[in-house]
Image (cartoon, rainbow, N blue to C red; front, side, top):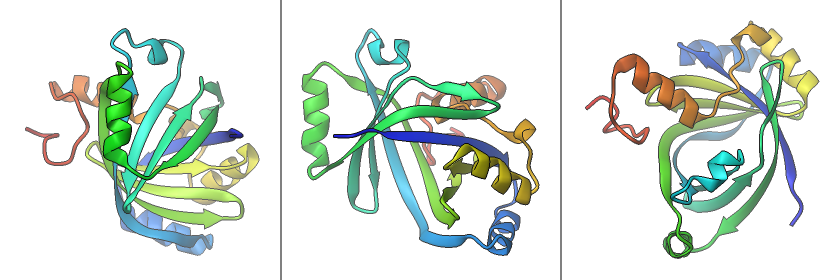
Length: 188
């Protein structure tokens, strides 16, 4: 299985309707209507994968399960780049059993609603999460900068942190003790 090269950045924003209006003016094409994602990040008890900068994620969205492994991150001007391998999983319950049998556990679970757009060759995702809204731009570096500028952002607005790291910062700021970034439990 060949790897893909993922090049992306996140941009936090407040007003979804404003972003959608800007995307229409690009004009970006809506590829997927809003859908729900439930993501499970797995690691070994000694956090061997995290220590190497590797992410192993099982995502459930639109009745499809995808197992993704992402390699260590290289960052440049707020954009992160890493190798990525994806595999469609037919039986998610069995996949979880396999990972647990290998000695892994769910280190972090996060949920979001995502709406996907496309402009030129760049995938633009509008992510609504329990900790705020994020625009995710994934594509060629030059195109990411161009689209961000067209939407009124600069590389000073870029965020190359993962949702795991963003959630850790959010928990510290809000003095929360929850382990996972889930909609019904986030503010309890």
